Image (cartoon, rainbow, N blue to C red; front, side):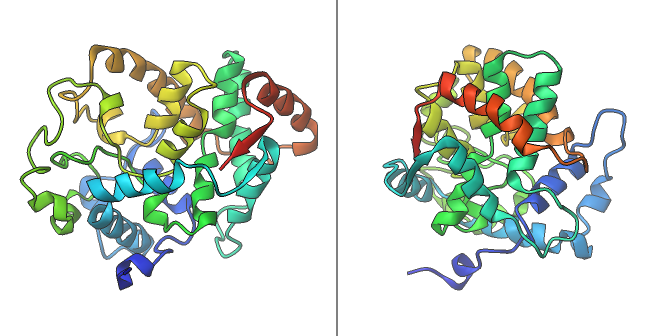
Length: 290
């Protein structure tokens, strides 16, 4: 049975509210971040939804929640459509009540991809930028926001105090379970992230959708682009293998395009569509099973 908390699917005004919060924590190089005191001002109206989002996220992102979501969604039996149709399906997430964004999901993805393209990166890198948020379709299958977006982190071991709003983990049952609340929990020293269960969300879901089709650097970008506790704080070095650390250089290359490529200039979708359809056809099957 779902609790009242779990039924509260929309603590954020829109999914972009989480991304705006990330920008406040990690502004563009050369810009000043909010002070810790400002960021922790829980009485600030603009942080109310973010705070409630992370309260739910940190309370319910348990080891067993992740296993259950993988069992459900990694069957990929919800919907089968062409890839471009999936991108347009994602557009139904646009929140008309949000006064701060006029760009739909597809336009944000095109902006990210076009910024990568303009810098001359390989075409698989461009494609990664274009599809990196497709996993947000989880919301369209009834998943609450806290199980779709948010900073990601390992489950099955002690929650790092480098994760945003760490105090909220006090209500997570895993924090009081001796099987999960030690430094390594169910894992071992430098076991490698492929052996670690990450909190459930759009990153992990999309990784499994494309893991057989894209180069390994692209898979790291997709799977760990929200793992800020690691690629900004190095909080989980004890779980990363040497190979993980080398591959995280690609995550570092990708994140500025995701965070800082937003612009009020609207991409002309009709002009860009042929290029991206060809790119999809080069790397991905004709349809995607969601």
